[in-house]
Length: 73
Image 1: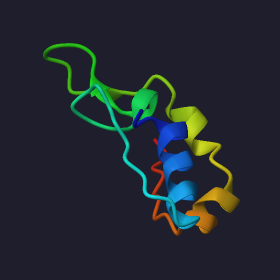
Image 2: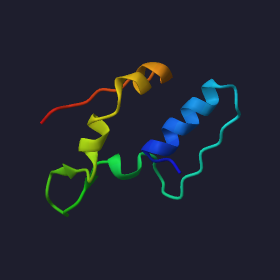
Image 3: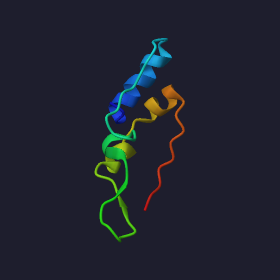
């Protein structure tokens, strides 16, 4: 799937020269790390597991050459 772990695994496999195809059943990637409008009429975006994404090891970010910007609220 296109959640955090699936995307990291796909990134490492691609860097190792493998052909990778990520399949996701939803209309977006990110898994539980995606922010969403949880309540109609309320201008607030919530994420179930955004805290866990903030724990993403810097080594993985560096290995994959990812550009990640974490916003503190």
